[in-house]
Length: 398
Ligand SMILES: Cc1cc2nc3c(=O)[nH]c(=O)nc-3n(C[C@H](O)[C@H](O)[C@H](O)COP(=O)(O)OP(=O)(O)OC[C@H]3O[C@@H](n4cnc5c(N)ncnc54)[C@H](O)[C@@H]3O)c2cc1C
Image (tube, rainbow, N blue to C red):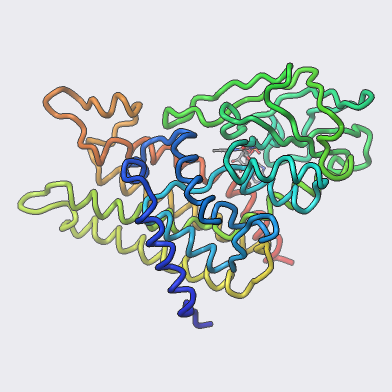
């Protein structure tokens, strides 16, 4: 199958590119391009611009504030914003909860929560995983017991991204411990993170960041009005959520951005009379990665253009996820090799100080090691690559 962007798609690409140029704060762009850690305020500043333009919720239907884009337009948007140095849309409220509330929430839940998500006023944490219940999520043990007009929730969630800066959590909880199958007794609850009994404890990550958290739920009283959909049907809402946001799963824009960074860094590293970019070994690795990325890009575009439903089918999404995350890790490993002695896995502060006062770490290399360590997570979250391979193997052998 031949693939070509239409003239309308190309015009849309120019529109997004110009929007990024006109609206992205140069200081924020610099932070993104150097791979420095972003705070909630950084994201919110950019999201505000997207919200004003009507672009903050690409996956939502137009009647709820989505822009009504095709898969390809969403792909172009992701690519152009990332190449332009803008922060990605990372919030679980936009990417995960919004579509679930739109599909299964009550009118009151939609009116109460969706506008605040669009305006980045409320950030949501995804409370699914538990110690011992990650890949095998249906084994989750957090309980919610109905007492009058409340559920009383007890349990322990883990790896909850950004919970420490979130106002709200959406959680899978067990409401029927006696159900015939583990998937059948689970419900989907919205929990205010300020409720007594909620304790959020950040986890130190490989790159020195603290974006992940443990969440302890100790006799937390949640109004029954915070149940999404029907009691004990939460597993199907969770599956809907996990399958929804898959158009950008290969992360092509991010890989392109990192490859461009690799070229810049190689050009900035002196080697003999020239620079590292003149080294045939470096050029060969760059070329191999660029070729692999191009192959993945066309696979991704073929799948997206053949598929106009909201969801990208499971096995294709698994292939894109495995290949995209592997490539991302390989590109970041190349960055580390390019940075050579500057790729030191310390905190950003320590790296900025450099080895000694006479040889401070060049700014461009400051976060390379941390970014490469951080990229290890990509093959774990959103379903580990081993589990994705199981999905692929099952379909291929059937
Ligand atoms: C950066 C990051 C952000 C995350 N954010 C969130 C979040 O916001 N909310 C949330 O709920 N969760 C989040 N997670 C958790 C994530 O969903 C789990 O880490 C993931 O599902 C794997 O579960 P686990 O860590 O319990 O590992 P396990 O499931 O215990 O797996 C351990 C190892 O065994 C392998 N394995 C497991 N089962 C199989 C199998 N059947 N076949 C072959 N190999 C197998 C896995 O691939 C892995 O290598 C996040 C994780 C990361 C890394």
